[in-house]
Length: 249
View (cartoon, rainbow, N blue to C red):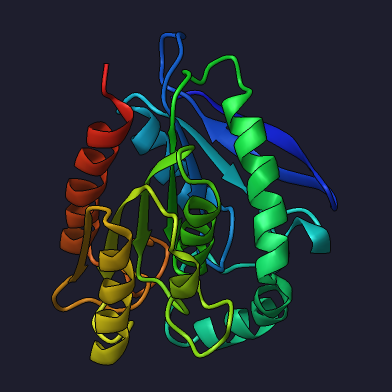
């Protein structure tokens, strides 16, 4: 699949990133894909290319662009339990600085860029995210009803908090179908129940399930949390979700 580097104008500067396109030209439904906290790197390029092979234009922005171009920290080729704390320690200041206001300003810019590409078909798009990217995907979908028709988040963090702007409090008005794929321990049962109640109130179709035997980060092949079976299960949930909502003739 063709991959091309992109620069996305935003209210606060220019976000670097890349896009993955299907072979053969033409126009295709758009997908905005948010990385995990480790950011844009080869494993994300491979995942975006796999998704593009199913007929989607996939945009992957470097959402920490305010702090510099990707990568912001040197990553080991394989992130294991020994190296993970040091890497997370370097990245957490960027995560903490990425406020809801910044997320929403950027989402406007990313969606404008995505829907303005000549390779992207008219109609709604999807938002997909991993780890912290799942929060970004939910905020994007909630802020753009009618434009984002499907949202999926995998091994998320921080979707239900006590904060006034907790993602689950932003859902009124949401029109997208939602799938949430949790690792064991990602959310406490009470938080899962509150998340489901918030989605029930919107009237949208939604699913939330724990992928058995998984650790946080199970989709990322460059980490020790990677779980091949759960990774394939995530595709089994994601691809039909996109097909139902983006390929309606």
